[in-house]
Image 1 (spheres, rainbow, N blue to C red):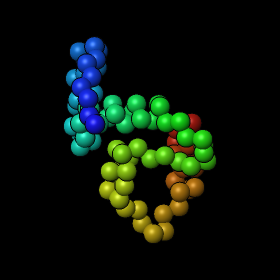
Image 2: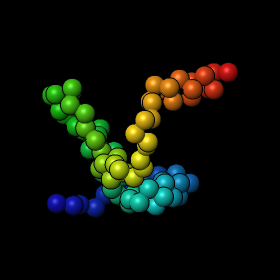
Image 3: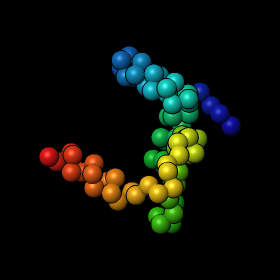
Image 4: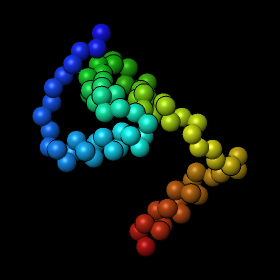
Length: 83
């Protein structure tokens, strides 16, 4: 059952958060709900990875070539970063 919650936050943070939510195709309420769900998850099995609804909604948005090498890509990124 959904219930209303009133929060007091800095106006600029609210504006930025709304922009972020909109650009990611979700609502501010869903983002906050997902965040609180992550914080309060009392799973005894830490080996199981929990995927937030936002991340799950992004699954399959982009595709990589079948021959994409993650290790080479990561190495190239780190070499550039620490030049």
